[in-house]
Image (cartoon, rainbow, N blue to C red; front, side, top):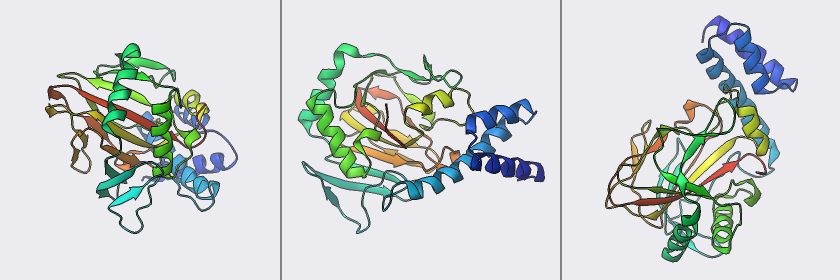
Length: 280
């Protein structure tokens, strides 16, 4: 980091400590003539450090991010209603592949319940904080509200127990359908602090801090979830799921991920994003 960039980071840290928001500081830095890439990286570093520090004291005795209890290297975790298998564990980034996460009946129910609302998937518009159709994401999707029906509520409560994160901090469950050729190019799930729309988005529960993707239907070929930074590829097997967390909104978390094109058959997934605070 250059001397000038170090000065910018020092200024950002001082302002954050005085209660200024990352969004207002980003706008001020850009207006002062700093290059957007420099601002984005430096704000992410400053905000990431602050978030880690804040979270360490915000939940006494708890993790800074959602985290299954793997301290004893278990081969499974018994939740209140289901034994969930531990298939693969990566430490950095924190990635855990779960087997037997959902029953066949739950997978089929979620698919059936999603049908009336399926429409072309959208992504977050970083400029406005709204949503937009994006060529990078060619699936169809819909959202359930939290605990919208008994199946959704049961799955959400299981995830809250498994990942040791409050039920209320989860966004509504999203179901996605990927037909042949459909994909989602590699991306991050956190909200970029340097984007002007982020201030509006995080009002509903703070930053995203973790994602879990659950596979509801296995395609015959293709459709893997990939993590390019670490060379990991997770096959979309019905009833299984992949969880990953990110303690700050920065590429250093190595949580770049995507869905490869489905080349034969059809893939359904259910995605759950977890926030810092209660999602409203």
